[in-house]
Image (tube, rainbow, N blue to C red; front, side):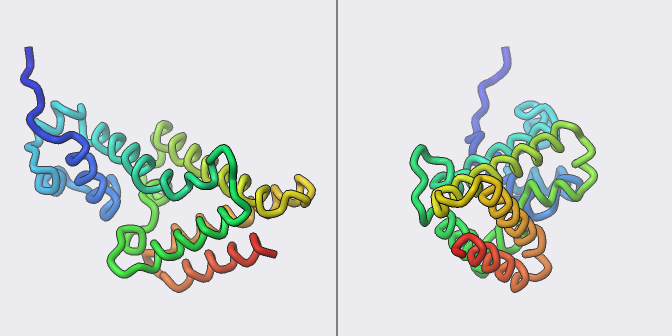
Amino acid sequence: MGRAPTFDAAAVVRAARDVFWAHGYEEASLPDLESATGLSRSSIYHAFGSKRGLFDAAVTSYLDDVTRPRLRPLTAEHVAPDALAAYLSSLRDALTAAGSPAAAHGCLLLNASGAPVAHDPAVRATVAAYRDELRAGIGRGVAARHPDLPAAEQDRLAEACTALVVAALLVVRVDPDAAARSLDAATGLAAA
């Protein structure tokens, strides 16, 4: 019978998440992960099965701790008419705050979509599901703000706002001003 882990698994996953977020899956070395988590390579493999298992846990943590709390007002049972504007403002603040992980690194999942790890069907499915979740939330925000718009117009507006959010999350690492402009454009579209 194996020993029970003597570490805080959630803290380990958060530490690994920060390494993957900053460096990407491929560039996150096992020594970097060992240093960040305080675990040895054998403990990482024992607890998570592999580097990839730790990455999967980090992605779940990213979704649960970083993205979904910000999206929650757009996925609630009742979506307020100003929920989309508040979401876009909150995201803009996160992407323009000096030193924030989002400003420095963009989106962990969208970054993975442009890396070799995206060839893995499970990663590809996770990224697609995240984009769908984002689009659904934005769609609910558009519907709450513009309930009298025809459904086709709501869909076009939600799709455009989603594309601008994705663009902001992708470009923020190299051009924070462009990321802010994308979110400002989404805010303008949603308000019009």
